[in-house]
Amino acid sequence: MSAVIATSTMSALRVEFVTDLPQLEALAQPWETLNRTATDHDAPFFQSFPWSYHVARVRLERSPHRFKLLVASLWRGTELVGIWPLSLQRSAGAWIARSLDDPFGQFAGVAFASANDIKPGVAAIVHQLKQEALADGLQIEALVAGSHLHAALLNLGASINEANHAVYVDLRACATIKEFRQNVNAKTRKNLRNLRNRLERTHGLAEHVIEERAQVGALIDQTFAERQRWMARFGRTSPAFRDGDFAAVLTGLAVASGINLLGFSLTTEEAIASAQWGFVYLGRYYAYLSAKNPDYDEYSPGRMHLGMVIEACLTRGIKFLELMAPASDYKLDWTDRTKRLDSASLPITLKGRIAIYASAAMGAPWARRLSRALPQSARKALIRRLSRN
Image (cartoon, rainbow, N blue to C red):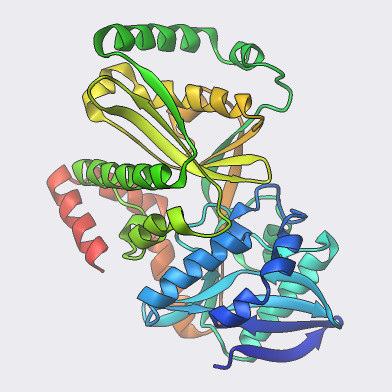
């Protein structure tokens, strides 16, 4: 496949597929200009050029046998009007078009100059995927319900299924931390205040906001390792943690150009009780990975620390936090705001239909319930087998 595939037009739009890093680099500036318009949905970090380029570089280097770049750019004459960051990923013997950062991204989307071009633009791109026989199917996870990409795929006849709910905190109406606290349930505030006082008396307590990249890099390593231990302990998994490239994607963030990182930790005199880190993009904090020390579980350190993180962001002028999926109780103690995330699938070939069906079956609610009903030893053995695959 050549670096750029020029295709026919649909509704005066021309589609080109970018398939290597040098061609991708040429799009850096116009891509970011498009993404900053946020015409698809209001949380576009995972469609940004720096993030997409970082993921693509790591995956092309480590896994070219199962990952190919397929970024769709949309043109009207000489004007770049839209970008859909896609990839081809090998699944059950088929090549499936997915979001470029799948399974590491949290919100799927497109970067377009005008929302009016998204529906015809997505139709043109899907048409060329079929016309050029580039993919066996299309499968988009973490699709924000109500986004323009969501509507475009629904219009094309994609099968849409509710997959999850992501939590967010909107502080734009809060001028002070006191105003934010008043919006939190009084009983929750009291319980957490008591837990904090107990923890401080018994073990000492300190809050840290980490901005220096090397220090955030160390925090990334710590939270990843602790999350792995937690998953092994309870027999849990996720598509990102099952992917052998995830660790490399994370460890490379500390030196990745153009990605703004922010970390937080809650420490005692003996150890880190809770930590999290994420990205800052267009004035919004994206909480990407957190971990807590089980030695302090009696104090609910993750729940307690999240409130401190929210207040630290507000102090820094960050008034919108994406806490991501799932909608866990410890997040909902601090906010009642959620957004629905769907999955969309569109088979193109019989091979693609089989692969998409197999993937959907693995993530179906009944499959998750069955896994959780297994004895912990059996569940752990199943997770180890899935991770090897």
